[in-house]
Length: 310
Image 1 (cartoon, rainbow, N blue to C red):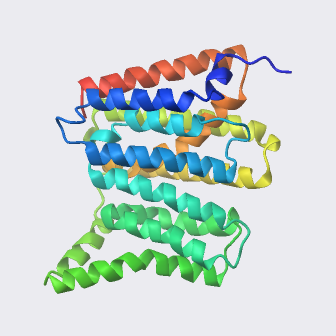
Image 2 (cartoon, rainbow, N blue to C red):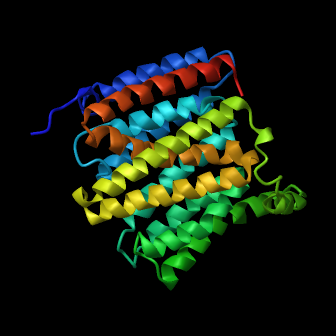
């Protein structure tokens, strides 16, 4: 039997999530939870954390008892400065979590038009707040066919209807208020590109956040693909979705760093399960040291973000 190291004890502890929740409350208070009126963002963090628990439980993302997916999500959320980001940014990543919940349940079910509709409805809702989420739609269509294995003409059209459904109401509202041009202006943002690779639009703090998220994602991807044979095929498909989507978001942020506020939350959602899998299922002396390095670096980056806000 493999020796359990501190990282494994922490990862499988029933106290991990409650302790992380207390940490989240303390860091939120340090960010100015009351003074800066961050209650909505904090509420979204709480709801999203619960949904990450459900995402893990319903899909067996971690094959042993562990709350590390939610714990990883919480600390990465705080590290990334999402608590002080616009409400639209945190609601966008909340929609993406719910999207995954419906999306994964459609696995190998080519009659799952309802699930696919609700999944893409979440992306449609997210796009009403952050229109550049539409850049992810072609990738999600591909993954519907290649990884979820639920793609056919019926589920494809269900996804299209789900995407446009929120805009039926939004268009009606703008027409009713005599401002139909607002909807056109919303979609024109898709054609407005900043300078490619213009990282001068990001603060040093944001660049460090993206670098750390990218590093954690790469570590998680490499680890999972070296050990994927230990998981069920369905779980492998899910982790491939996290990996591919995460890499795609990194590429988008590298090309258009001005989309930081809109896409970083989605990057956090995809990174959390990958780094959680690494923490739970590695147990060498080196990985134990890396666990402490990860925890310390996240803590320092979070404190840096509080004292040097982006």
